[in-house]
Length: 150
Image 1 (cartoon, rainbow, N blue to C red):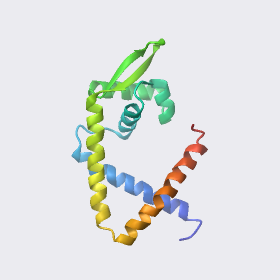
Image 2: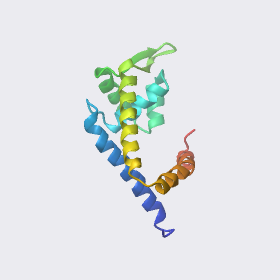
Image 3: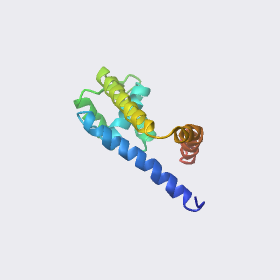
């Protein structure tokens, strides 16, 4: 592998895996949610009570974009938007049980799909991917730090 092309080749491979996973999972889970909707749901399930502006900052989206997503997800029964008791102008987001169920269903199907794809690789390839996991996590941390994120 050429050092000058390695960053692009790695990025292309990671994007291809992510895109193909998304495309294979999309028809299995309805109603369909866009990527930003899933990201917001995952954030709120992981941090119930997060504010809209904090969620926007975390997701690197404009506040009005997150408000639109919140409205859509609220209409679908996945989020509850409540006034912040400390500041009535601000809103706090909490997931509904349906949100947790939806994300768990998605996670389960994603795991099944990956398990099936990984089973078609030989043992050496599976071991190589397993060995790469700590490095990929470290790479994600470096990208997170370079973006000035906490």
